[in-house]
Length: 327
Image 1 (spheres, rainbow, N blue to C red):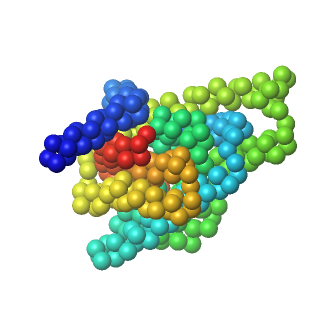
Image 2 (cartoon, helix red, strand yellow):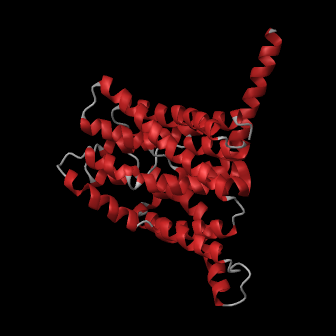
Image 3 (cartoon, rainbow, N blue to C red):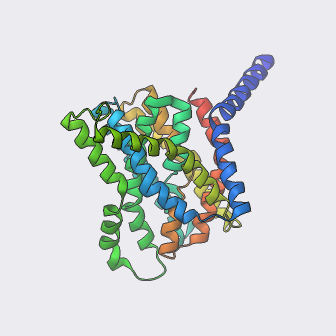
């Protein structure tokens, strides 16, 4: 029995290493390039972030949805999973924050760090490598849903914990952010093309040429997102409040995928959708949460620390997670 146990443990170790090499190492290489470029060249992550958000990400969403063969029921279930993960994580985080005696600002920062995952810069490339084109389409639905919630619920959480009284600005803050989200317009445009039945992909005219231009932008999206993640990590600061940062990391990297698995089973997701949803739920804290924390002066150093810690720790946790999912 001892020999069998040793062989089993060795096999599991090989699986984790194989996942790390095949799925996460290519991602880590691109992120590392961005990290060292930032350390050496001191690039402007704000400009690159706007290029990704307003230029490349909408093109990626539009092209992927136009080409997608995914059924509507699959998309709805994946969107429900993404929403349920965020909401359930919110309930758990609040139930933990109260007995710890956290103040309003710390609770809000913990929520921002635990609820919203980096499903774009990190999640989409990981899903692409792990599950291929079919999985990527499902991951895109998760990403869009989570992005909308981050720009609505996330704004509300940030305002609630702001160090200055800005609660009255909440409805306007949420509305202004939602209408500025280019992802929404990309989704609407793709749905119009699909429902109209217009053969945009095969059109030999000007519209077809526009589509092929958007395809070029979409091709550039994932590499730039990974470079941007590395650049943002390259501007990191020292970890502050390690106790809360470790708690946020545990919630984000460990509890979130566990909850996602249970919810996915309850929703009846198939093996592919379950794997994609659990992987996306296990992503580290969304980098964009640092923007909200800074804008509303809501424990920004704590949120930045959570992003850095969870992003680094995710190489280990995602390796284990992917091996458990048998990618």
